[in-house]
Length: 174
Image 1 (spheres, rainbow, N blue to C red):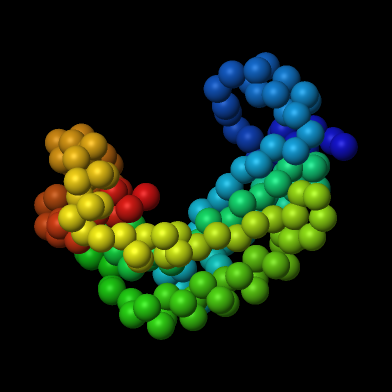
Image 2: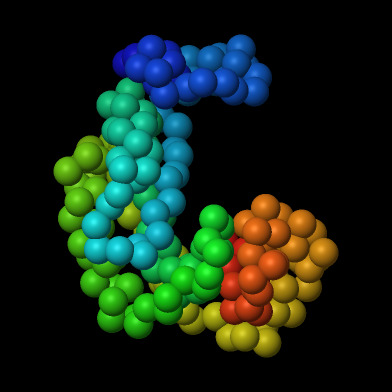
């Protein structure tokens, strides 16, 4: 098998990285490295940004590594505030589920789900939708500093127009 890092570098997918020698050694020594990409189902079709990460995943898999595709059916219920000037439109569970199914079909064109390093698709709605609010806030919310969260770039941009408590929950759900 080829070294996935070499393949990605040769194809121009890597501009810079930390610890290049250690990473090269890690990829040379390990034959099947699990890795993940995340996709939020905010539409029923993939966009060009997804295509780039799916191509990286495809090359990684062809070199023997195992893709784990995380579809954000739960986090899409809130919506990532990054790069947005307004709150994202809230989608119904039906719309999100429809988008998840459509996206899964599209992913199958790039990633193989068979064999030893066959990909796995997981949907974070499977565990996030069953959370109970008080338990979640006690166990997860208590670990986050609002000051640190508001310092994050995704929230800083939204502070001028207004950031809802709903959107603030996105980081906790991740």
